Length: 301
Image (cartoon, rainbow, N blue to C red):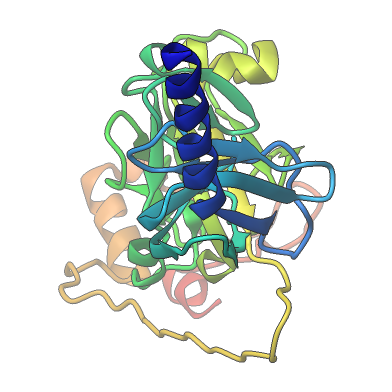
């Protein structure tokens, strides 16, 4: 009888404690307000958590009374931490989360490009370019803006002529068919990114190692440049302007011979060779006068 009474009182105490616990409910959406099914909600420093249903709704019951921090996370999105959540006896509190997409680094996985891989396989393979630094540069070329922005990325110019597009090399000159990387803009393969303005770019990722670029197949043998451009967002219209100007001028020119001086010098050096090269008096075999009869007429022409 004594054991029975002890067990009975323990059950009563546990039921009383459970009756004093609170609960947490809410919804998890993305940056566009769409629900995220399968997102994880964790009460930090406890073993309590839940996952969202197909409508992005979650519910955590039997949360002990106290103050906690909640973390919402979903693969492919940046985690969100909400602190100082106060749980009161027999009360339910609503906590909603809005996650934004991006590159997520965790202890196990890394979201790279449009795939998920083990972290140990992509250490040093993925480089994210700081877009804010690129937009501050006085250039309209993405290739020029990437110069010196990431380790292992070589940006070379075939000539110094204005407007010549630079060549971007990520994995060296190891291919016979071509050394250009694979360009991905908003998920679509393009031949070049020179048409993009630095002000239109939201995110740039450079995938260098084979384990990272393999998600795009054999086309990514020379590396991948993945670009995400800016798109419309919900809210009030925002207008921004960024402009710059530049000019080129030769500061020191060399003294050159005039056309008259050049031809005269040629005649003085080797008159036999250049006697009839530039001008010639008289007429040809058909009686047609030569166009340039003297050095003066040649220079005036």
